[in-house]
Length: 113
Image (cartoon, rainbow, N blue to C red; front, side, top):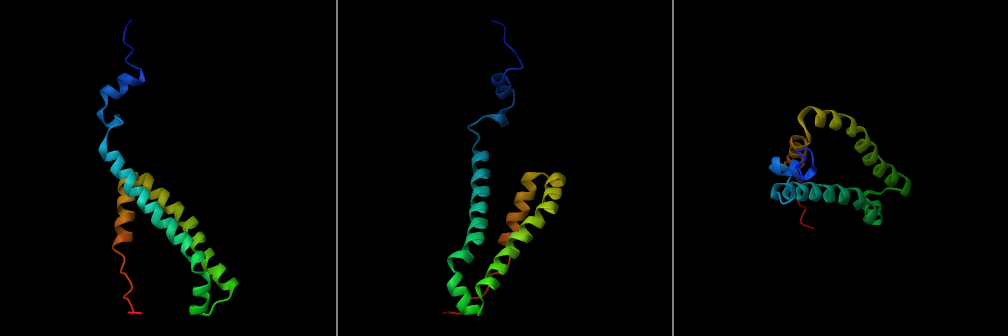
């Protein structure tokens, strides 16, 4: 039986970066999954803390809903430039830059309460 050079098996043998046992792919997947979990946490946090946020900031339910909606609008708007940057730099560099920018943001000082 002649070997077919266009078969998926031969493509994997000829390109080592396509091997499923590549550790770097799992590391990248883990980092991006952790970043997604953090974004999801920030999206859900106002819902969990709604009563405390309303009391501390003296907000009505409508004002808190508007505040939470702003996050969605900014997230949706930023998909356009982030998509353009991803096309320009590539997904790895864009993800790395986004994670580094998020990690280097100044953290608020604790009030000690």
